[in-house]
Amino acid sequence: MFRKILIANRGEIACRVIDTCRRLGVATVAVYSDADRDARHVAMAHEAAHIGGPAPKDSYLKGDAIIAAAKATGAEAIHPGYGFLSENPDFVDAVEQAELTFIGPSAAAIRAMGLKDAAKALMEKAGVPVVPGCHGDNQDDRHLAQAADAIGYPVLIKAVAGGGGKGMRLVEAPGDFDEKLQSARGEALTAFGNPAVLIEKYVQKPRHIEVQVFGDGTRAVHLFERDCSLQRRHQKVIEEAPAPGMTEEMRAAMGQAAVRAAEAIGYAGAGTIEFIVDGSEGLRPDRFWFMEMNTRLQVEHPVTEAITGVDLVEWQLRVASGESLPARQEDLEITGHAFEARLYAEDVPAGFLPATGTLTHLKFPQGARSETGVRQGDRISPWYDPMIAKIVTHGPTRLAALNRLERALAATEVAGTVTNLAFLGALARHEGFRAGAVDTGLIARDIEALTAAPPVPFIARALAALGAAGLALPGETAQGFTLWQALRRTVQVEDFTAVVEVLSSHARRVAIAGDSGVITWAGDGWRLGEAKWPARVVLTGDEVAVFGPDTFRWRLHDPLDRASDHAASDLTLSPMPGQVKAVFVSAGQEVAAGDRLAILEAMKMEHTLTAARAGRVAEVLVTPGAQVEAHAALIRLEEE
Image (cartoon, rainbow, N blue to C red; front, side, top):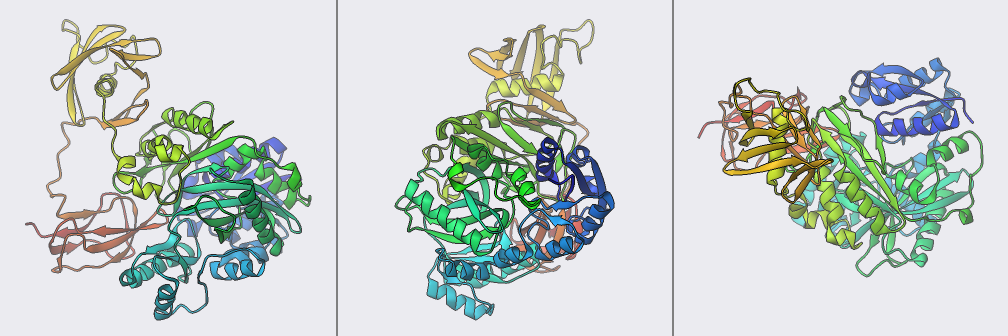
């Protein structure tokens, strides 16, 4: 076993690796950018090395700086985590040339699976079923369009060097192909430095089921499957293991195919074979096809660990240090069921736009595995993926594990930024999902119901008023009041005004818009008649948050704050910090509502900004390549 390793990553995966290293007595070295100087993974590691500026290209993608840090600190090996350099074969070569160990597969294995078209050809040769498609080197627009016609619509355009839904577009009709092709290429070039794409048949009732494999360079085993069908824009939201509806016959067929795939390339370490499954007639062993192999640890690996009892990071360290496979296939078995929900800082009503902000309050639930790279007081940076945490639950049955996930999400508290917490809770309660009727189109079909704002009960508004008045805990009776006057005051919150009156240390009367009630302390929460709400009210800066079955957040009213003089429809604002990748209009140009104005690149994704109304462009306030802050004015239309 190694004595010291360097972790070439950040955030929750770096913290996850450090946890296992601590248990095994392995010293750790963290690396950090300017933006991560005070990050949680830096604080957790035994020592840390600065490697550059906040942009990934200036830090976490600088292989030479990372290797130099490993040599300088006496690390024997480098764990890549996932993302960044984890699937870069040139980096693996450089690590080995520096006489260090790469904790992962060989460069040859990564190259064999790194390009989707070449990987599919290799899998066909190994006897692994693949999806019909066009995977050749010919990238001519006309050739690709003809291939799509031959395959039959709908088709998927996919970046050959891609992953995480980037560089991927669904095309449902021939007339949309050219525009979607150019969009996919542009995003692929930005994300991976490679604009090449492939074309695949789009499965109408698709399920995304992947198999965890582990090899030692000669032999491989599988650690069963994960169902990752609950996706939004081809990005996973909630994962589970095992897959609902899985039969022993199907599991055996997929597991054998996955092991053949791993052994065909002499795979060493943890990897995932991703399959697309036609679930229109249940799970059948002749209805799954190879999509790609991820030659690294996956974000969702905790659900596999939960059902197998295996620490995959420990296995990585053991195999990389020269040991053979820690277990035989017959030693592995499934116990119970597990779910993982990805908690992000993102604005769901605004189309799941990534968000930033300072985590003024952060509390994770008891009884669940919470993997995170942030702490209360940390800032969600515009430079990296806005994940806050992964919430993982396990139970003896699927329904028990899902019930635990629902309760864990309800007990999670985040203030200081918008999150997808309510969306995750709605998914956990979704009748179809609870019944196991999952496919990759579930979220898109029910998106309106899943993203609908929950009704705000009077008690939630009343508690927000108590929080704003500093009276959210029993015994708080004097804050904000004046001697010789009644214990009553008016507070103004974002969209309502309340009158709060203190009746006793354990009772308050609150009146809002003609509705009023007496709220009393019930020992572990406030009660209004039969309605009870946990006493989790947090006031931070200019925001008050009320946590309970649903989370509600309000801004406090600032009487000195004046509205902008510009009409919102006249200005196109940047929805988040990012870089302007393209501008499609110029001053004097006429535009229609919905026309593309610009593309903003932020948090590793492209966001198209469109005109809110028809009009004439008065000013273009930015140029391509400009770095802008959230709410920066980009384009102004002439006043109507």
